[in-house]
Length: 166
Image (tube, rainbow, N blue to C red; front, side, top):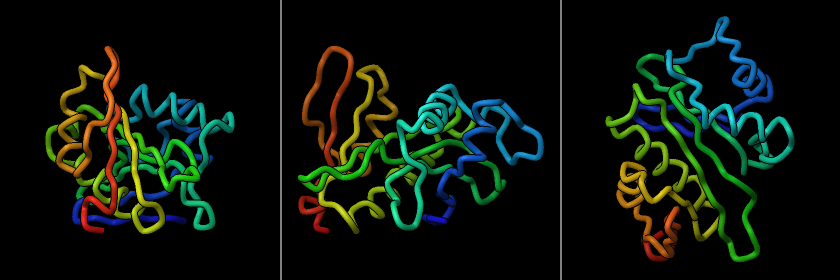
């Protein structure tokens, strides 16, 4: 199983069984915060079960991860790769944290860790945010992302390992 560890978090590969429990809202014997899974977690788990996003494995780490807070040993969000790296050495990430865990730097810590993990294998990490999601934009800025394009709805971001001295 792929595990990325930080000082406060364990970011571990999401399993098919966990995705099924998320979609079914099966909370029995789950170590989840009360507001996890979020609608975003449910949508991503549904997509993964349909084959639209991969489950991360040691052989193919470009998939989905659960974010677990060490102090409580509870799942508080999700993060992962939207696809495998393209021919340009780029891979896109997505993430979400349940509301009760927001505002404590958890998303920034998780995104930074996933970027460090990705930059061991690719040169560029991409992301996008809704234009109104200022908190997520701040997370990306703190993690060294630069905005590259904006539409009325979204802002696209890029984190280049060369620009960050990696």
